[in-house]
Image (cartoon, rainbow, N blue to C red):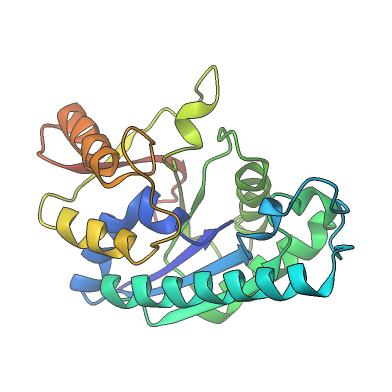
Length: 237
């Protein structure tokens, strides 16, 4: 049994990037913990809102935003249950504004979670994604996972549909693939729990494209469905 820690910028990153792999881990009785660093909603506020961690918005809009954040959290927990995750932590940092937070604070959060879960493997967002939060989470995770003392978890980065493929030129060059042919249905069910995040095809965050993407990575490694990762650091003991 392994301890697995997933550190992501936003709720739904984990399903879009590695939902099948998570299902595979939990089916193998690995202990999976997930950390959501941002609330995943606040960047969708109306133009004219103050671009700060504390928003200058009226009470009505604030209440609406709080309801949306709470719904997204409940959707996350529902999705986690489908995937077999029972340990979820939400930090509710400002969405798409992690650059407004001191980097050391983000690193310390991740270090605390690493100390708590003592992972054998850490998965996180990819440094080449278009979304700036993904880049910052990756960089913070890389620092928090530096191989000192006895702390040397394997570190993998995954792409997120509707972010990774939108960056040009693409720097996502996966060299590790997981066969999810037996887990693709679970991945799709878990994504359906995020009802407000799903879109209609041909939007990349659609059920059709989730399946298409898994098939695409499957063709790369000779499987029906697969998920793709970059190995960032792997120390052979």
